[in-house]
Length: 342
Image (cartoon, rainbow, N blue to C red):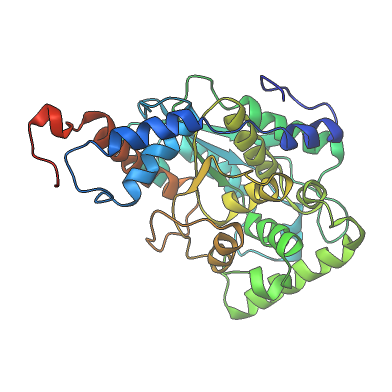
């Protein structure tokens, strides 16, 4: 098993990197469970917070996890499939929103500030659009590997907790196509309203997805090929960041539908490919609930969000911090001189 992260030069190397994902530290997990059993509370009374603390510890490889240095990375990309009329928004909005992020004017800027998280915005492939998925693979192999490596390089080694988000006009179509190829069901199951489609728009979007699936029918048995043929630059970068976090012992909070779809191939390439991630929330985008079930992920929040930008992941930061604070800050029965249950 590789002891450190390496940047893949070809698809075979990427496939091996995905197969060799490091395991969790179950010694740390056991130590956390033992310490938790001695804290001044009934066993299990903090519910999922207790599991969150153990999750953070076993992937940080310590029985005293931290969530002080939290990064939110928003990957941005453009999509050739917008030529098929799958969104009412012009592609210029992607670049304009990237500038808005950098100027501090978006929702994620406010959430990052309140959560005391470091926000980074990465415009993948200089926002050049992918190919139109209904006519050709969205990325050739060099471009796919370059985009994925961009995501890997964006993950800093001093990060305690990583939150991932995205921005890209047309990327809900790419995410829906990836999910349909990975899990079946066609465009009708996975196409949602995205950034404001009406019923007719959703039907058209579903038909475009089905055309893309038919175009790439001979290449959809491999999860990596699915992401390369149907995904986007920012989706590839998100998957790269998820891989890098695993090798660097960093737990990950996934955001909404697009972000989860980008990470989904890893779950089919490795039995515990997404074990170091948690789903921050369930998006109002129709396919996200289906995807969460397919991946066995239980969202931490359900707020009706469908913004993207990493907004749901950012909102879940205080939950992880609270879980860790309770684990590391509470007194034990012996320390507090509180009588234990007989």
